[in-house]
Length: 177
Ligand SMILES: Cc1cc2nc3c(=O)[nH]c(=O)nc-3n(C[C@H](O)[C@H](O)[C@H](O)COP(=O)(O)O)c2cc1C
Image (cartoon, rainbow, N blue to C red; front, side, top):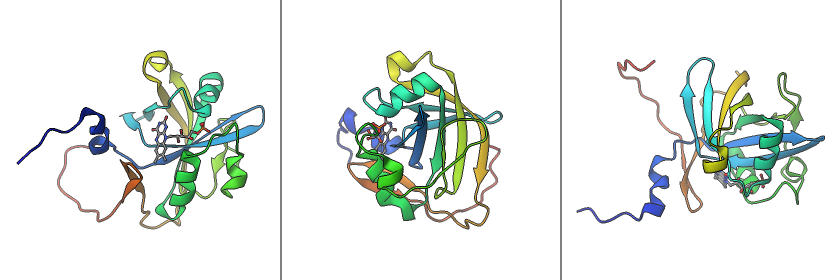
């Protein structure tokens, strides 16, 4: 039996995850926010679409600098990730508060978070939908991975403080590359 699903709850079922940490930087001040509303748009060069609310401090920095890093954490960092999602960069130095280590990126001024096993340096290439939807199109300009990280467990947001942790991997004859 099915019952009506409130439209406000739809997002919980399509959240692709993983939850990522977006770093931005302006005038030497680094910021971090948690983000789960993102989607791949193209393979190569990799293009990513993401929604960053204009209520977030990261929004103004990204709109101005056109640069960020998408850092992918494993579940061991989950409390810090949620902490970055519950605090404002204008009030808190999140690198300091959550003991994250900033590392220089190669193609952008925003820092990599060393503790994250993947870091994607990104430049904003299209802001046409920013005013209406807070939707940025990013191009990944440099990507890093910690090759020692085996079987990373990522976290996927289900809404209201619930997370699903990535699990079993299976292989099937799929034509999708
Ligand atoms: C799990 C999680 C996922 C989030 N996903 C998004 C998102 O996709 N887009 C967004 O604008 N805010 C998202 N947020 C909220 C921001 O991370 C939050 O507003 C943060 O405080 C912004 O920081 P800032 O003001 O320093 O930029 C998420 C928060 C959490 C905890």
